[in-house]
Image (cartoon, rainbow, N blue to C red; front, side, top):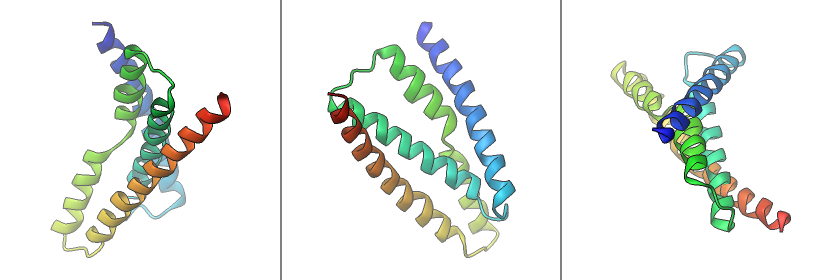
Length: 128
């Protein structure tokens, strides 16, 4: 039961962050392309890469911390299902930018996880 509370509270926090970042992005960039989802997915990938880099370097996350951070906050923050729906909608509406959305989301997401992972390893090494 405690793990459900950690996930729930974390998801609440992650969902609020997702909403704020998405709205903020659309105030700056054209909302006809899913830049808000792109920003959320890239930041989510960077953060999970960073945290996994810390964990792989030796920082131990308790089970409760993993539920709260990874499943809760990051899970509530990232919007991969929104990415899938938006790409489907772009493709269904015969907009040629569906492929661009896939390339940017996946390519830059993987790059962000890699950079975040390196950053996590480097940060942990400085703490020693």
